[in-house]
Length: 162
Length: 291
Figure 1 (tube, rainbow over the protein chains, first blue to last red):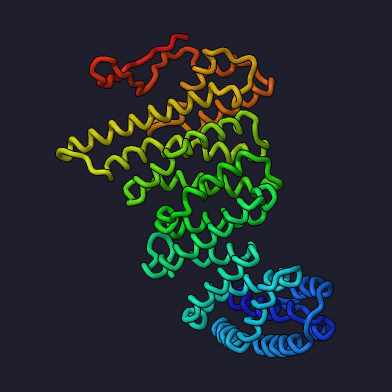
Figure 2: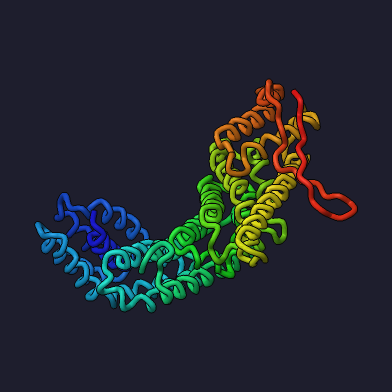
């Protein structure tokens, strides 16, 4: 799986980790054989225990649907384009995810489990978009680690330097 | 962002700050009543991150004010029984690469400070003792190979680092004199190392094989020196020796196996130095063992 697809997957995972699951289940059941399906199901099982906000799920699923339709048969360059667009569009939701993660607890941990890989993949595969935000992003990661000691922050910063 | 040694200055600065911030936070947590064995995930992730810094941001790693604490934490982790072997493995991976980097790149600017870091508070000697104890049965067998790699890397790196540090400190005289001084420093480093090995071998807490006589311990020190130290070291032979020590300690093998390494050989102790009382000049001697 290309790093751009990993970005896309982790964006959706992060957004979904913020919300309820019923609507997500409906869409995923109609998405057969997709690259993201297994991972999504794992996520949904985790979310089933946690609950979330309906409006975020709706936004996430809307993005997810757009991405999947667009990616069907596209080249890697086009996948890159989608991933970049998705990061820009989803950024407010990702900031929201960081806030939820910062508050800690089991729910925060579930969100951070998705958010840190997203940061990692974005830095690796989307330099054009993420490059100008690196300083701020690093501050967010350090802040999250300071507050939660989540191991994902260490892995993200470690891989970042490579 | 560039990897290896070639990160840009601003990047390095950002990562240096991040490394210190994260290290400080992790250490604070551990010191606040959360020992490494109670937070294995954090410790593993921390050492994995440090390994990446060591590999890709070498100067950031070695120059970091967090490095001494990191080495202390590594030693502390090896002293306790950790739940899950991946934690210990991540610590050992870092230590192995740490010493390999020192050995392979002795000319770097950080070598002098690193030598001090390792010398201070008996860090290197303590690590040598701990790894030898692990190799003699004090650690799970699945980690034996990892401990051996650290042990060998330390034996190889120390004399080279000592010589490089002396060069970095600035020697006097022409080029030939400086080379001689470096060679002397390397030999001195080997002597220091030999002392640590001897102390570790004769430490009653490290090796508990009842069947070993004092001469056998001395023989082990000799074998480690012969096959573990210097450019003519033989890694596989040292591995066999230490594997035999493990079996002897577990009463699965007779101590004679160790003596057999020297059967039919005239063995000369390498690079042994003595200091005369009168003028404190050092003289190189050869000690011959007859078997």
